[in-house]
Amino acid sequence: MSLHQRTSARRRGPLSPECEKPLQPNAAGNDLESSLLQIFTDHHRTSLRLRETTVIETEKAKKEAVRVADLLVDEVNGGVQESFVNEKRIEMEIRGLAASIVRFMKQSDQWLTATHSINTAIKEIGDFENWMKTMEYDCKSITTAIHNIHKE
Image (cartoon, rainbow, N blue to C red; front, side, top):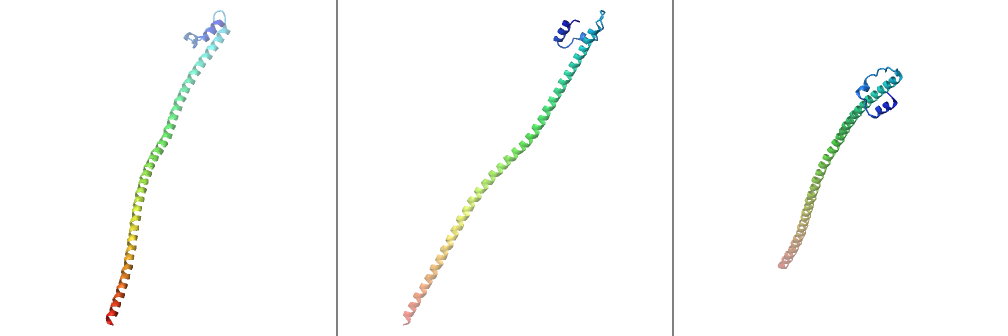
């Protein structure tokens, strides 16, 4: 095989099945050329197998990386989802507590108004009691004066 034939064989791509057969030395005694061709063929076959193995291993590594990435995303999303649910629950509790605070504030204002009214009523009762005592004293004074006038 000449140099031109070997170069064209390289350009064709993968070796054809006849190139994979071990070469027999030709009758002309080109043992060196056939040995070099055999070395080239062996090297080419080894390179193809290595390339195929590398492609397969790369695909396996990609699939494994995708699987690991999916597991990591699921794990992280699980925590995020749990946090989101907790956040919504806390927000609902905050709304409930805010409504309770407003209700208690209104009730406290009502109680404050009621106690103010009671205090005012008690003061009025105290004022009335003082007025009654004053009236009683005045009545006694008048009665005593009438009694004294009547005795004389």
